[in-house]
Amino acid sequence: MRHALILILTLGACSQDGAYPALLPTDQVLAPPALPAHAAPAATSAAPVETATAARASALQARAEALRGPVVDDALVTRAGATPTE
Image 1 (cartoon, rainbow, N blue to C red):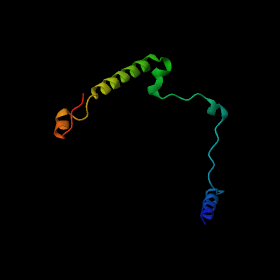
Image 2: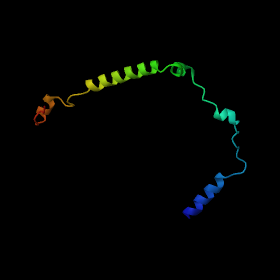
Image 3: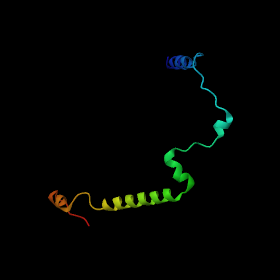
Image 4: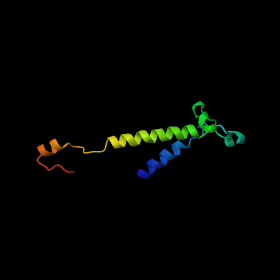
C-alpha cells in the first residue's frame, strides 16, 4: 500500500503540461557574474576588505575576552553551599 501511494505521487509529479524553464545562451551562462554595487571596492582592491575583516576580528576577540570569567559569582556559590573555585 505504501509503495502504491509513492508510485501515484511520483506519476502525478510527472505531468506533461508543466512549464519547462527557458534555456539561456551559452555566452550568458559562462559569463562572469555581475557584482552588486556594494562589492565594487572589493573587486578593485583587497585592502578595504582585509581592513574591515581585521577590525571585525579584533572586535570579536575583545568581546570574547570580556565574557571570560565565572558564570556564577562567588556569593551565589557560597549561598548554594559549595566552595568557590579559582
